[in-house]
Image (tube, rainbow, N blue to C red):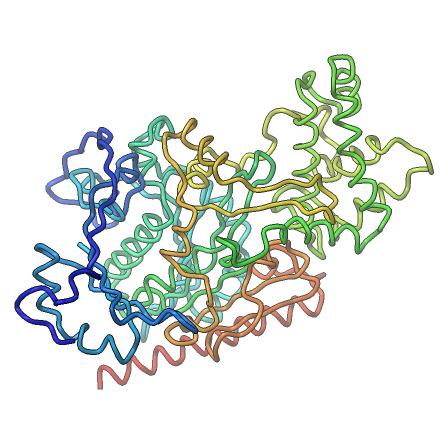
Length: 568
């Protein structure tokens, strides 16, 4: 049907739909913008996640389903993204959509949400963002060497710098400048000073999209300042940290991959190690993470698996009253008497989960000081007990390997937080955009548990005054049918995973294209490839890193050829 100067004749099929509205919350006070903004100071507001972002309004959109094919498969949606005026006017002046809808069996949608990304007075507020440079190996002539950029995460940037030795190892052969950028709201990069976690009005600026924009602004400005505008940029995965169901501190290396997808004009390649970009929505089975942790232990010793599986009920039974908690506090060498058996369960849960993640083939101190193959060592401890020994004693002894391998802890802060890298900001991120549904199956060594979005939403509203957007990450970055989507437009990403790492279940495990490569090692653990090389590294780790270097070299060589041709 052709469009005319009036609405199409099919008015009965044209539906006017209105959303409900709530009153907006009070916005944060704007800060005055300096007359001369420092070049390397990123603007605060690229995109926000404030209480106002949950404000809804009556948004008008028009549907025409006259030509829509519903069977055998639904026809496409042709969507007009509205602009500066009444949507009816644009509907009557976009006849092409009506003309071609019949042959495609298409549903026509014309759209006129308030806050996905904002441009408010607060967006002119600036803050000091910390970044570290190492130019020891940087080649400046005849052309500037590449920038290897670490996209920071949930803590002080120095800690992650010391745990990403791979970048230092390969910088000399590439003549690379090393850049480590601290994530906003962590470490010393606090946009609102020392108390940013007290108000959703300030925490609203703590999002992954804001962080990625920070990185883009800083990298671009840095290249200009260093007279290296044409230097290629490769980003390396940065982890996020936080707590799920009060049990697990996540390490999610997704920022590098997302940065490459969102800012391909800034970074020409990305190394995304142990990046579970498919852990959102229902793309990956919700129980996969804890099933993988359990499999790590079961593969070392079925008895070890069974002991851990049995300990949870015993803790609940003994910790039912004050007398039981006193005895358990002694068993766990708690610095203070614990007030709940749940605290003891959490303490064990964290130890077993983290150890599975960092089951490295060489001694390491990434999370804690641990020996090589710590899961195997934990199971050796459990299996060394005589038959009939108390399962609580066994589990405590095994967990002590994680918390006290060096033997210098006289007591344990069971109800505190022994991990200095788990910071307050993640609670906010998990309650807004970083929603990773996780469950525990009956086959796991952990107690069965389900995911309830409604309960989570109410908790987030109580603690932070916001509700999580369950599907925002896949809306913003994608994830569904990633093999088909990225094959069409993505390029130059390495997804590396080790199958001992439980996060690998949400990772990309197969090549998507000739330039989006999956490197998978059966015995690898969490971002093992990004750690410094050691003389004790197994051959398969050495080979994985060699492949990564070869791929990166190919990216940079092609980039430099393209630049040369551009200037000819």
